[in-house]
Length: 124
Image 1 (cartoon, helix red, strand yellow):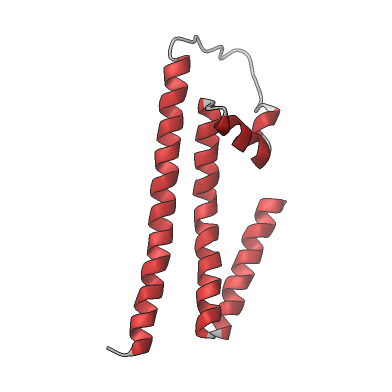
Image 2 (cartoon, rainbow, N blue to C red):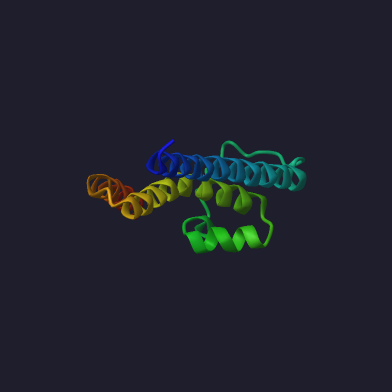
């Protein structure tokens, strides 16, 4: 096996680990948040006739992190969802860095465009 093939396999394995770890970690955090939420609110009666929008605390990353730090069930769930959203973005970042390291300029440009589109869609 050539040195390049071995490096490519390690790179692919790293990207697979980034996705796997991100998804498993996000699912674990969401499940823990769901269990925490149910533990605290299992006996609550839902008021389906009253609409309540998302609280302001959950409209920013800082607010979500603050709520998760205070062990709010909804905050922990939202943090897990943020991590789930960040996982493919992290994969694109790792891909860009890997292609830069390999000096594969075509793929660097392609992944940089994909990354910029992802970041633009999150910002708008």
